[in-house]
Image (cartoon, rainbow, N blue to C red; front, top):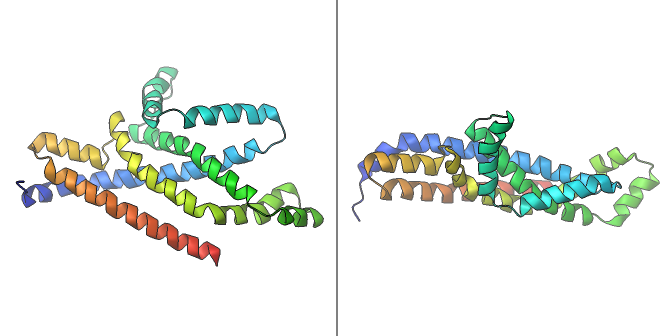
Length: 216
């Protein structure tokens, strides 16, 4: 293998640009998936089947459709309906929406794991429903689901290279661009491979730290 440190040095400016885009997609996509996942969960617990049924159908459809298909649909079809967004915005929303259907299941499990006595205690204290969710149920449920949510953050990181399919220059997009311009593939692809490992490790450390703080 003809390894060239000069190619690594030349690739670094593009690498940092790609890393920033990847981290933006990861952080914003995670926030969207966490919020939307909780919204889907709460809507599925409403008494009305006219709310539960469409939400259930929509989330099943999204969960059972490849993320790449959703990326293409949002990027190429929405402009035909007059809705035009940047490639990065479209990609972030697609990742957040796709993974919200998985975090929804995580929240559901966390809520169902809250002891029945907590619901009964809130009822005995005559707490309003919104207050019961806010101060009794959700804090306990979210504390239980942090490890599972963390696993999906790592999965989202590994799916960010799909954004390259809609012209987003993330780490892989920058590596491909550099490779095409300089005819060097080994160095840029090795660099981003190591970067994915390091970012995954740092994310897991941060999530374990958050989990320990919530358990206290």
